[in-house]
Image (cartoon, rainbow, N blue to C red; front, side, top):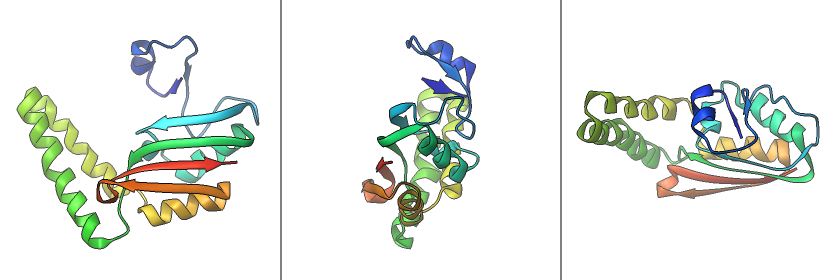
Amino acid sequence: MLDVSSYMLKAADFRDKVQATFEFLPFRDAVFDGVVSGFAVRDALDLKETLLQVKRVLRNGGRFAFCDLGKPSSTFKAVMIALYLRIVPSTMGLATAGRSGLRYGSLFDTYLLVLNNKELAAALSSLFGNAVLHETQLGGSIVAKCVR
């Protein structure tokens, strides 16, 4: 398990834990058969470097899979997802957790920064060759599968 947050690492029930960032994975080249990430790739400060690091630590034939927030390439769908993320997470957070729940509105800020799904698919394909991006929820959720 790898996370930049010591708080998250302490809370996790995993034996092997590493505190690090995506952009500098402290592992030897070609050491893993697979890398899996859930709702974290979008938080990378440098997506290209993150993908290069993941590719570096994977063995030939190794797999990289992740699920995350997506941004549809269709302008209409992108606006619909943006409106949803602008309103619903903050409203639900406020209703369930009070003022501290307003933090969930930061999903909208993240959404503005991510590549659209077509651009992300192209970036994954250019680095991994074999990459597939599945879209769900109007393209607002993605699952990526790559093979080195």
